[in-house]
Each structure stands twice: as C-alpha cells, then as structure tokens.
Image (cartoon, rainbow, N blue to C red; front, side, top):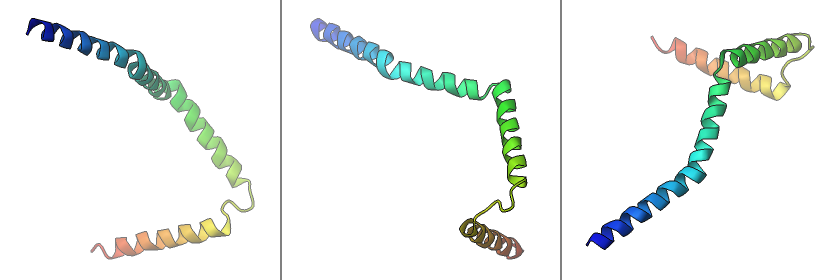
Length: 87
C-alpha cells in the first residue's frame, strides 16, 4: 500500500511538472500579452489609431462598397423596426 502511494505521488508530481513546463508557460505568455494590451499606454495608442483610421475614411469619396452599404441598411432597418415594435 505504501508503495502505491509513493508511486502515485511521483506520477502526480511528474504530470504537474510537465504541465507547468508546457501549458503553464504558454498560459503565462498569453497573460502577459493581455496585460500589455490592457496597459494605459496601449489603450491610448489604440484610440489614436482608431481616430486616424476614421479621419482617413472621412477623406475618401465612398467609405463602404455597395454590398456593405446594402447589408448595413437592412440591418439598421431591422433594428429600427424592432425598436418601434417594442412598445
């Protein structure tokens, strides 16, 4: 019985170490990337980039192609009809 417990503990620790070395390191990399994206400086950079893209699209003659415009129009009409029927 004692031998079974020792073997079970040994296998458990081997699996735990293998997990930490493989999947654990990948999870840590993902967590650091997410925390970098959430940082105040990156949020400001993302907002500035969005503003630049909007300014650039305002200078264009046509922002949407015809298929996207039709799709967006139908979507907005559906939302408008649902709002009016909500009463």
